[in-house]
Image (cartoon, rainbow, N blue to C red; front, side):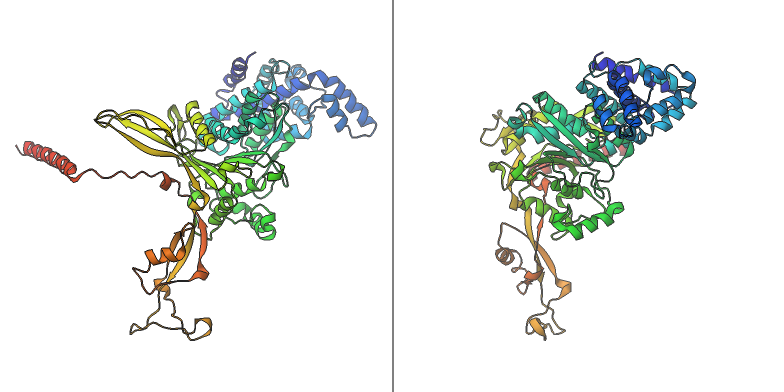
Length: 611
């Protein structure tokens, strides 16, 4: 049975559920049953040996688990005498027997079914008199690994996950990232490592701290298997939503991964992989979600552990925890001397610029940039995600930057690389095609400045568009036409994003207009500052403070001075400012001509009405 036929067969179970289940709930039945049948088939050849070993070791008073695992030849086992074939022999007791069969699994597998709340679905199906029919349907398909490989099974399971996520698109964005966004992130993650990843037998680790249903981990594995079948990616993750956690863990189980690497819980307050380091990481943490529930643990770690913990550089405002996930991933980077790490994370616009100098957000950006960790930021098209239409960005960070990238950051504006979807899914109306993903990947890999050249004919109509990389000539201009150039890829020094916030003071004056002088301590004999006239200025890091002050402030306020003790260093990434193209207004004569024409038409219409 090929992948499409297998997927269609499993999907046909939905016909049985129609009427008793809402479409959005089909996955609560089909996904756990698919997992159950897969592992049932995988354990079938060793079933008798496992039961005999379990009985012998239990009778001898020895912990049977390690011996049973060895006999099963898997990372899981089942010690119930039942299997799905035997379940079909007792229709009247199907619910009790199925529940008992699930209790016979090893702890990691039971955890999957508990997180699916499968016992509740067994009861619901039994009451609807559907349990035997659904179980029988699954018992008839052969999902043994010899018939359906881990890779094929993984693709089938992913397709089912995607379908169910799209059916319940009102919540899909919470635990499902669009596939094309993940493909782009995976490409950016691996594009510079082809030489390393093509070696036979290479093993690398990957981690997602907000794993959702495991889509990012799965697509990363797909990429690697396409480029090197002998390469192995060991997956790790953590997820807070019980159902998403169950799906992710089940997906890893189906792919032959060690499911103990997928942990349940809140990554920020309870790190399920404490002390672990990874080669690659991917994440799409929730946008703009407050971290008040975990505030106590996070603040305690920040204050007590400092830079020995995850949140040493600073804490963002409680209303948005995105940058906490960024810091968490940085803490998971393998030291550069051990090979280093690279990760990609999706964030909204807020982490680029929110918070002035000295704020938690600015201090986090400062840490990232001054430690030379940020490789690139890619602006995605709007309307790409299921539950939001806001602007989103992919940040790529690495502690093993190649020499030509050190001290620099690449900004890529991919906001125009999209195609309209035939059917919207929630807020998702656009998608990136394969050519779009390939273009962005190529721009990142080449690490050069580039522009989009739009060719216009004599009437101002667009006739062509192409990408011009630094050093290349723009396209030819047709007679009477012109070429409009807009930046697409920018390479900027790290210090471009830094600034000093200086405090500008003006003297306090008495009723006669005389400057008030201090009378005590360090302030004695010095002009006193008037707090009502206090102001601040942001001076770029690349410019001297005194020169800026003399040019921008003193001509307007000759009595002003800088309070150097209050100077703070800040960092922001004003992405759009670096891609702004000034378009001069049209000539006044042209505007006047248009206005006269419009005025003439209005007067003509008024005349017709009065007639």
